[in-house]
Structures are given as structure tokens and as C-alpha cells.
Image 1 (tube, rainbow, N blue to C red):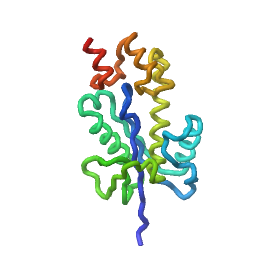
Image 2: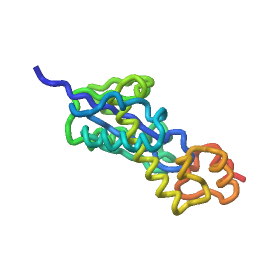
Image 3: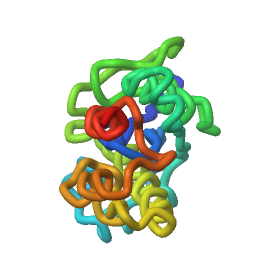
Image 4: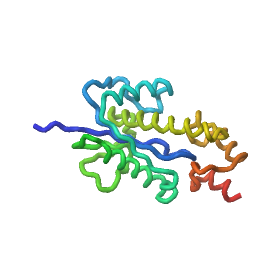
Length: 189
């Protein structure tokens, strides 16, 4: 009997005002500590980084990114699905079943199942959420070194008070999502 290879897929950054949307696709290996795997939002920053390293050492994984420009051109849902598809295609091992967080899947996938709140319910999707979140957080921290007026090193592009105040005071950057309401409002003033 053929062994079923399951991949988990999740995206991070849909609700942000700045930065790309990032997805991860993960296939777990036998050595993984399943007890560590839960929704990335429920794990403190430092611990999440440690767990991400553990997952990377015990899985096949790939990252897919959709840029700020693609988010503007396509809309956030379609850009999220594009980043998911990019991650799935990059996997070096082909899954026989792909489990995707949410209720939408990229076009053209075969043998998949969407799982609402999958990052809480399914360990392999939790693993994908952790890797995607750590990757995106690190990216936003690097961007915050150049764009220090928006507190991206702590809000990672989400619309926190500090980020909104930075937008009002310093305007937008090329990393801001111009179609998102708070950013668009500043543009149209």
C-alpha cells in the first residue's frame, strides 16, 4: 500500500497594512515533536522561532510570497492563494494530499482539502503557520531597520496605534498596501 504524504499549508499577513503575504507548505518527517505544534498566534515570539527551527529540521518545507504589488493587482485573497500555490509548487516532495487552512484553495490543485481553523486543528497546518509567521516576522524586522517610523519590528505591519501614527506623520512607503483602508485614506487626503 502506498504511503500517504500529507502537506499542510497556511498563510500569514492577510490583515497587515504593509509587507507581502507569506505562505508555507510543510510535510512533516517522523522526528517531529507534535506537542510543540499549535496555532502560531498562540506561541510567544522567541518560542515560535525555536519551534520553527525544529520544524525546519524535521520536515520538507517551502515558502511562497506574494508582493505588495500583487496584493494591489489581485486583491488580498487571490494574492494569499498565489503565495500558497508558490509554496506548494516549491516543495521538493510531492504530497498525495494537501490540507489548506481556511475555506479557499489555489486554482489547479489536485487532492486537497480546506480546513477552517486548520492552524488550530491540524498539526501539519500548525507547522506551516509557524514557519510562515517566523519568516514574515523576520522580514518585517529587517524592513523596520530601514523604515523605523512604523514600529514594524513589533507590529510586523499590522495596523497598531504606533503604525497608524507613523502613517499619519510620515506618510506611506513602497511596502504599504495602498488599497487597504487606513493607507488609502492617507493617500486620498
